[in-house]
Figure (cartoon, rainbow, N blue to C red):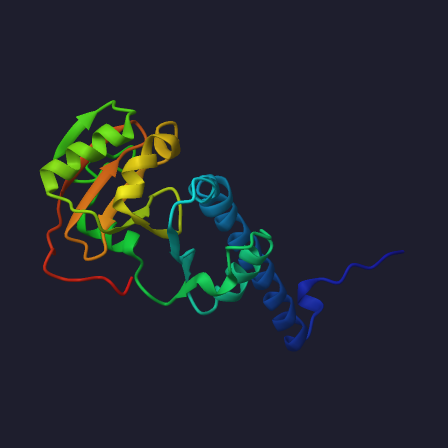
Length: 212
């Protein structure tokens, strides 16, 4: 006759060890799922395509995590076996740029994230045309910019001129939202998953966020 040990039969040390094991497994699964969705599934094609086009692109960080979560996210990134994705690219204990953007520009839709910015154009799949129009309206000069998305977790630094040159190749048929902003967070460009483009200057344009 087999006997299955029940939780009430465990001593306090055994109960604590069991809870720690469950917590470890839960955090491991959560980290793997987050990295799979936010990097491997939604973002990695963007990055690999940019590298194939010989664009200059710098990963600021891959994701944000608490100190407790950091080892699990680092392990999940290591498991991707990508030479450019390093476990030390996990940002610990800081508000991410995406967190700040979503706080500064709450969604105007209840069904999907649509940034609260002036409308630039609708249903436009030509990314370069939209970016050129935004460049004219916002007076954007060639500089370093950030690319991020509400559907991806990394923050990527690009050159505006290269972004314009290759934007259709990379983004025209992409299924995610797109966000572009300068390093000082003075202007922002947004494309929803339904190709609705919006752009404008930020409400806190005088504050630099170069540390993000």
